[in-house]
Figure 1 (spheres, helix red, strand yellow):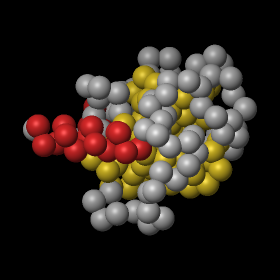
Figure 2 (tube, helix red, strand yellow):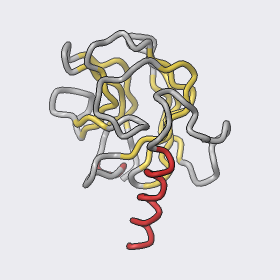
Figure 3 (cartoon, one colour):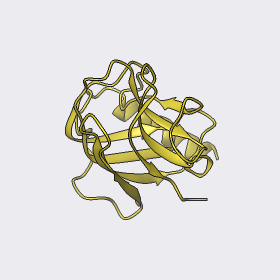
Figure 4 (cartoon, helix red, strand yellow):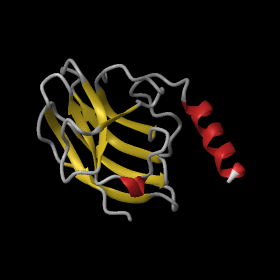
Length: 143
């Protein structure tokens, strides 16, 4: 358990210094241990991307697009059937809880908030708190 925590903390420190939308030295092709969760369908603001789980608390998004035009958009998780106000914001790839900027064919690595795991959530997507709007999400089916 301590080794896993040390690895997670090391990964956070390595990736926390990157610029929003940067590739963060993520390989172009998924690693063997990554589990494909789904492709985010575009609902609005040009959101799309391929979502993978690296481990219980780490999500990697490849080919991420988002126009950056919403005033209060966040990566969003929850345990209901689709995104809503009861969901939880996920810090961006820099660990920031500021509204998201735009992404263009980005590769980002996210760490779920403390106490949350991939197995705890039913969806992952992008959500605007100000307008309570779902920009696109996938259903997470790992249990």
